[in-house]
Image (tube, rainbow, N blue to C red):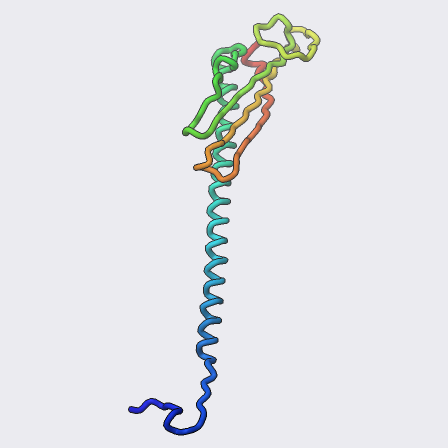
Length: 164
């Protein structure tokens, strides 16, 4: 089998090279598709981690508020949360939970630390007590989330049955 060559035939031989140009275009198209897929994968993974960390922070905030109401109901009085949650609780080495509870009661002689709001005393039948629970959950660890996460939730709970 002989290769076709243009030297022996005496005429000029021109190869167009269209196969090489098509191969280069195919490689460029495949490389572009791969670059876009890698970029989309990293963005999706980052967003999935951020969503997971934010959902965990929301759950920790809700659980901290429920725990505060549980402690009030168990003690049957106003609980001093400044001693209970100081320093802020650190969960899983990177979630920091800080709880602040402020009481609003109708009896100025109650054993609760009363807020700065001037409340008018009412009779025992109309006595009321509310707790404003401020929960802050922060995530500062760079290994866990690419974005710093800070969740603040405020809950107002009726604690009248537990206090009076």
